[in-house]
Amino acid sequence: MATGFFWDERCFWHAGGTYAFTVPVGGLVQPQAAGGLPESPETKRRLKTLMEVTGLWSEVTPQTAPPASRDDLLRVHPEAFLDRFQAVSDAGGGELGLRTPFSQGGFEIAALSAGLATGALRSVLSGQTETAYALSRPPGHHCLPDWPNGFCLLANIAVAVESVLAEGLAGRVAVLDWDVHHGNGTEAIFYDRDDVLTVSLHQEHNYPLETGDADACGEGDGTGCNVNIPLPPGTGHDGYLAAFDRIAAPAIARFAPDVIVVACGYDAAAIDPLGRMLASVETFRALAQRTMQLAADTCGGRMACVHEGGYSELYVPFCGHAVIRALSDSAIEAPDPLADMIAARQPGPAQSRFIDGWIDELAAFHGT
Image (cartoon, rainbow, N blue to C red; front, side):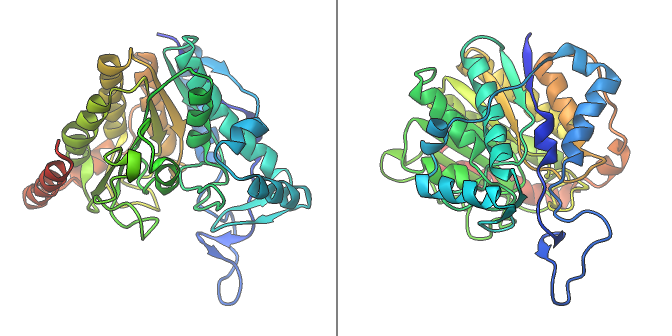
């Protein structure tokens, strides 16, 4: 099975302004001794490094892709926004939205990140690879057409989807977002469309606070083509797989897409600083395998993953390694260093019953 791995060193060079965690420095907020925003290059760089050390790197097809073209970007983002972003980037950087600082050259790196996502999706739809993974940075699923948001400067997946639709490589695309935060940007861009299904598995009211409720189902032609699956904090491994099996997978199968695109965030992991969901390496491996089977059943196995969130420098590499191992059908494993601890923290019987009931209600609402 050929798995394309799309990456570019320049994406690791994206740099933001001065933050302390998610709060701008100033007043009583002191600068941190090291780092700033949780979104840093290290989680992604360490994923690639772990693949090299284990040997998984030799079992994928490393590739790069050109930056998203102006035409590609204009299908999602207004010209005035792109012009302003370019001008601020050329002038040394700044911040246009919410928690989206960038330095000089930030526009070019963001366009490259969107280009990697586009390249991965094109490779799958053109038959160059059966599956693909884009190590995109900065991420994209929170970005609105004219409003960067939550570390996301351009809407990477939306740009990629619009590009392949315009080129006639696909007619129907399903986007499955398992980042711990609601994929509000992707949802907003396709909310009134019936050619793109958006499904978001996320922690309820984590980020953004005002989006992601189950009753946001699309509008107009897109009614029923947006499926939100908000889950309670502490859902854990079994709950995530139940939500996938009982809600996400049936919705995608019913939609019958030509390809599945995964917004592949790892911040539902148990030790992530921005989530409280108790997922593990095994959770992400199982989600990837289930999605691959779903793709095999619905769209000839065509599946592309685009890297989104995940902020534990220790743990993201192991989660990503498990997903890419599944995509490439590799026997090379990077054992979870926290498996026993995370297993011990999984929900007990009472909480499990509560989570099952929650998922039952969501499944009934979505008709799955």
